[in-house]
Each structure stands twice: as C-alpha cells, then as structure tokens.
Image (cartoon, rainbow, N blue to C red; front, side, top):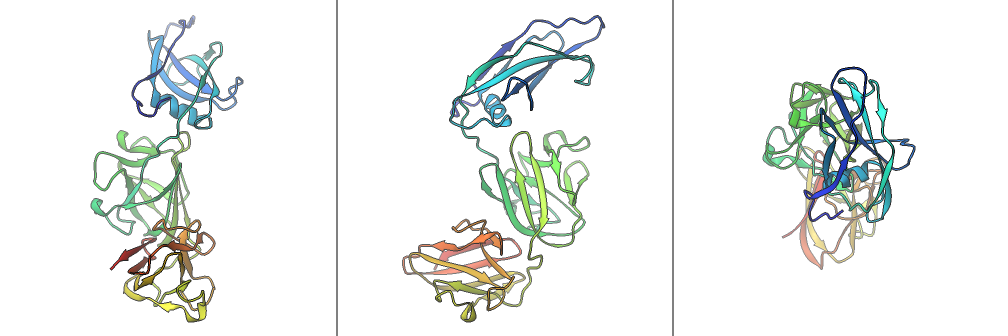
Length: 327
C-alpha cells in the first residue's frame, strides 16, 4: 500500500452469484481477517443487487489491515471471503464463499486530530478556540475541564466545517457519526452533540481512533479541582527543593505564570503545595515538552532547552495545557 496515493485502486474483487430459492434481493458482505477461521472478521464493504464485483481504494485496504491488527510496514497475509444474505439483516440465510488470501504491507495510518468545543468545555462554543487533544498514534487525550449537564462535540479543525465528530447512532447527522463506544457519563444530545453527565471538574478524555474501535472514554482526574490559590515551580531551577518551590502568579481561575531564565537541560514540575503531596502536575504521560499537563500518577518532568534565555512559563490547569514562550 502506497500512502502517497490513498485514492488509487488497491484491490478489485469479483465473485459468482449466490443462489437462493427465496425470490428476494441478495446482498453481499466482503470480510477480511487475520486468520483463515475468521475469528475476528472485519467488514471491508457491502454491495447489493446484481453487483458481483467491487474495488477498494488503497486507503480502504490500509484501514482494513489496521482493523485486523496487521503491523505497519510488515508484509502479512490477509484472508478474504464474501458472504451473501437476504433482506436487511446480514445474519439472514447467510452463504459464505471460499476463502482466498493476499499478501499486504500496510503503511502507518495518519489518525485524525480532534478539537473539543461546546458548552461543557473550557472554550465554550467558539470554534476558532476549539481545544486540540494531545495525539500519540491512535490515541488522543487531554486532562481538561468539563461542565455537568452541558453539550459538546469534537471538530476536525478550528472551524465548524468540514469535519465534526459525534455519536455514531441513528438520530445524529449522518456526516457527524463517529464514536461507536461511549463511557457511561455521556449521552446523545440532539442530532449534533453529546452531553456530559458527570460532576463539573477536570477529566481525562481519551479517544481511540482505531478503525474498528472509535471509542470516547471520560474519567475523573485524580485532581478534580483547578481553582487553587497558589501553585509553585520546582525542578532544576531550584535544585528540586519542594520546600522552597517558586510561587507562580495567578492570572485567572486555574491559570498561573512566571517569567525566568531557563538553561539547556531545564526540567521542572508544578506543585499545589510546597511538598510532594497530591497536588502535582507535569508533562502528560511522561517526561517531555508536549504542552499538555498531567496530574500526579500520569506525568513526567517538563523538559526544555532554554539556552540561558528568559521565558514566560504559563500553566493552565483548567485547560490542561502549558506554554513556555521566550520574552
């Protein structure tokens, strides 16, 4: 599969007509699998009527390879079969074809970006300020503010069009349908949105964009609050001495800043008290400089090569982000 030509034909498949004694329309479902027994089949597509051949694009084939958990950039066998059935339910009088196979080398998928927007969110309904989630491979995640009993959805960009993501259910606009699995604190809301039913506070939002999963899971942060009177910086900037951590200046609810010189190899965290107790934030899910905050238990050091220059460090616990900007 060549990722440079995703719309090119990737596979053309044809089959013989199925025969039934029942005089009704025959439909066909094309399935692929990682094993010949089709233990976990993936539906590549469906066709109806007299059609007995179809073509799938490079992108569709690559998504199917991901859907059956084939490794990217590794040649592997993909098994294929066609099932015929009657009516609108794919389990009605099913007849399965013989199984054939092909060798396929999938490329690494480019997963979508997700931008959070809505009444439940930190940014409200301003699409231009929609909040992007941190993305690593198939997962997108963030610790951020959500408000009880308010609607929201995700965008594919910082504008209302062209891409919106909501619940994949009847009643949602067809071109908004995406999430096949939702956590228990979410409900479908109208034809565009989802509604958050948890208590107001900070939550970890996790999206798994894997083709056959497409899940949205929201769980409470270990630190549900955000509006603290003070927070402090601790790290190489003060010898990692929590008792003498540097107080930041509060600029709004949950948002703090401090300007200082940072050398190469600088590393620091944020504390909510002058010790190493529960109020602690750092780079989300491990050390680095992603710009996203994680609470104690899901963070690492914020690392930065400052070159001895002066920077304004801004930490927004409510939004779940931080910035380091040269002055």
